[in-house]
Image 1 (cartoon, one colour):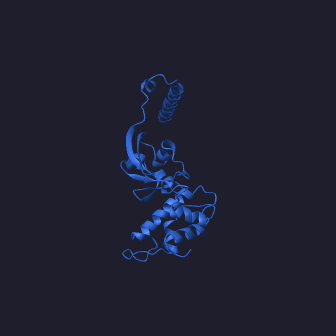
Image 2 (spheres, one colour):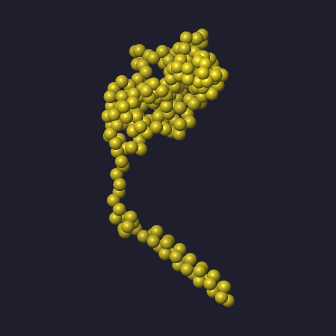
Image 3 (cartoon, helix red, strand yellow):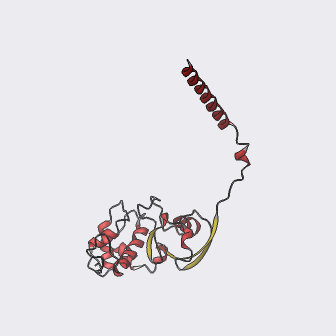
Length: 211
C-alpha cells in the first residue's frame, strides 16, 4: 500500500536520524565544542564603603552583595539563610536602607555605604538596638539575629521618616511606633525560634516606648 510505504519510510528515516544523534552525543568532545575557548567570568572593579572603610574589589559581576561581604571581605556576621530573599537573615543597610543582600548584585553598589551587623556597634560599645536585644532576650539560636537587628534599626528610621506601611491607616499621616507597624515591617525577617515578642519589646524600648 502506498500509504503504508510512506509511513515505513518515514519511520526508517526517523530511526536513522535518531541513531545518528545518539552516536554523535556519545563521541568525545573533540570537535566543535572542544575547539571553543572556555570563556572567563566577566569581572568588574567595585569600590564602596563597608562599615566606614573604603573597600575595592575586582569581582565576578555575578557575585551577590552577600557573597562579596562574607567571602571576599570576611564580614561573616551577615548570614546566608535561604539565599532566596525569603528569610531576611542576610539583611544589611545600604545608604541607611535595609535590603536582602542575597538578592542584590555587588556591582550595583558602586560608591554606596554598606553597614553590616559588625558596623553597628562593637562588643565594648553596642548599638542601642544590640543592647536592647540582649536585655530583652530578642534572639535564641542567633542565626537570624544580625539581620533582625539591622532590619529593626532601619524600621525605626522608616517610621521616624513617615514612610507608610501596608498597615498604615493613612499614606500621608505620620505612622506611629505601634506594635502593628513594627510587626508588619519586621515580617520579612523570619525567626524560627520564636523570639518575636522579645524582639518587639527591644524595638519598643529603643523607640522610646514602654517595653
